[in-house]
Length: 135
Image (cartoon, rainbow, N blue to C red):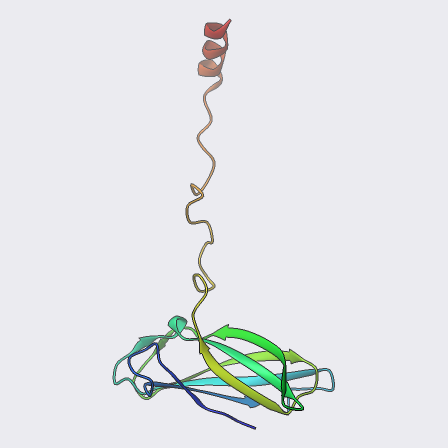
């Protein structure tokens, strides 16, 4: 089952459409790989990192696994981007829905607010004077 759902964060509910489909040539008895696509209908370029999704694998009418992902790069008007996700298990039914992006996209330093490095060391002469002054 392939289901397309409109994504509402870009401009209006019909501006970005998400779809999901299994990748039968790459899946196995233990893992199901899926291709998630997003098509930009906004009429202007958007940042793919702002499009996050939640995909679910279904079995007997019950969502049994949930995976999250997002896209990357710039998506021009009318363009489609893809991302691949994996589910542990063999599944045939999937849904995808928009999700709020969580934190910065991959590729950042991940060091924001940590000072970015060590403080400079005092010279041996200054350290020696500091010790003598405290005695």
